[in-house]
Structures are given as structure tokens and as C-alpha cells.
Image 1 (cartoon, one colour):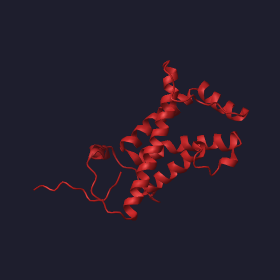
Image 2 (cartoon, rainbow, N blue to C red):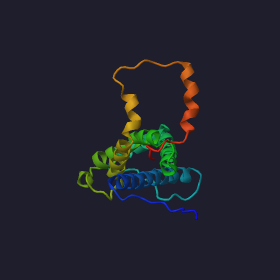
Image 3 (cartoon, rainbow, N blue to C red):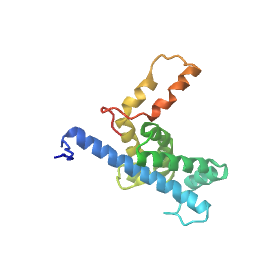
Length: 177
């Protein structure tokens, strides 16, 4: 008889991976939803939620300026790409770094430009939670960033590009998404 049961050990490691996976999926869904809402309106479709343009003048000025100079298109594209990567569990370390500046600007806008310091530690306020979640998920993947943090390094060569196909290899058993 073939035993196809999967056993899951209930320990701190399993709990940690489950929490990080849920946070990764939540952040990915939030980013994808935010990016989709912007692009949907650009194509004449209804957004999942309307894009807020700040409740105070400084916030409104920053967001409107980002739209006027075309930076908002870039930001919303990054949200869609990063969100999809997080949801599908591909290029997660890169996606978390890609989304950190977006999360930081959302945080800055929400807390400082809209003067919502009272929500600084509110887990239900995505203006701050997106940055906190992004940092937690990034820290969970810190081992993937360590090679980039070499104190002394030298540039490689064009031959290093030959290693690019290895990014699509299956992870070993010690790696978790």
C-alpha cells in the first residue's frame, strides 16, 4: 500500500514559515490590489478601491506630482510585479527589496504627510502595516541578501552571465519560500 500522507511537524520553525508565508501572501495581495486599482482606472475598468490622493495638502501635492511626472505609473507597475512575485512565491527576496521603497513612501505619506502618527502602531492601518510586513518578510529572507553585503567585493565578468539559468533551478531542502 502506498502511503501518501504528509506529516507536518508542529514546532517553532513550522509556525515561523506559516506566519511568513501568510504575511508574504497578504502583502502581495495588497500590493497587487493597489496596483490593479490604479491600472484598472487607466483602462476604464472599475478599481478594486479608488486611489486616495491624500487628505492634507502635502500628501495631495506629492501624489499628484508623482502622477504628473509619470512616477506613479512606475510605482503601480512595481506594485503589480512585486505583488505577483510574492503571491506566486517566485523571486521573493528580490520582490521584497523591490517593494521596500514603495512601502516606505506609503508609510511616509500616511504617517507624516497625512499626520496620522496616532496610527503608527495600528496593525489594521495598511499605511503603516505594509512597511512593517515588508520589513518582516525581507528579514525572513536575510540569508539571500548576505552575499550582497560583502564588505569588500570586486566586479565580475561577462562570463558570470552564464550562471543566470541557475535562478530557475529547484531549491534545495534547506530553502523555504
